[in-house]
Image 1 (cartoon, rainbow, N blue to C red):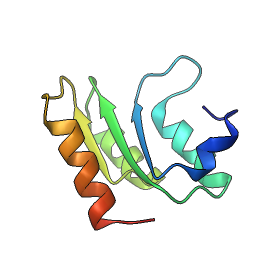
Image 2 (cartoon, rainbow, N blue to C red; image 1 turned 90 degrees about the horizontal axis):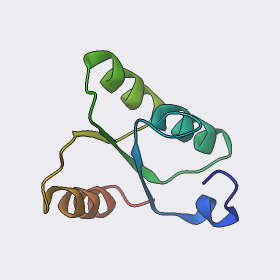
Image 3 (cartoon, helix red, strand yellow; image 1 turned 30 degrees about the vertical axis):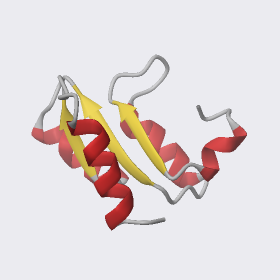
Image 4 (tube, one colour; image 1 turned 180 degrees about the vertical axis):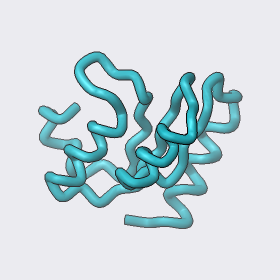
Amino acid sequence: MLDDPQADSATCLVADYRLADLDGVELLNQLRERGWQGQALLVTGYPSPELENAAYAAGYAQVIEKPVGDLTLPETIRRLIETNPS
């Protein structure tokens, strides 16, 4: 994703905490360092207070625990974009 030139124009990032090369918190940190200003949502199957604190410090607007319900993710993304436009 970091190599994609269109990533900087995305409105919203939905990232899993566990990624192949880095974690979701580091991904958002790197995007913010590049100047990305969009809204971000972290999804994790490994919730903890430490992870939530790190996610919010990196700029995630919300952390959602897996498994995510069928309507939860789309509704959360819609609300996030509507209430926090970039």
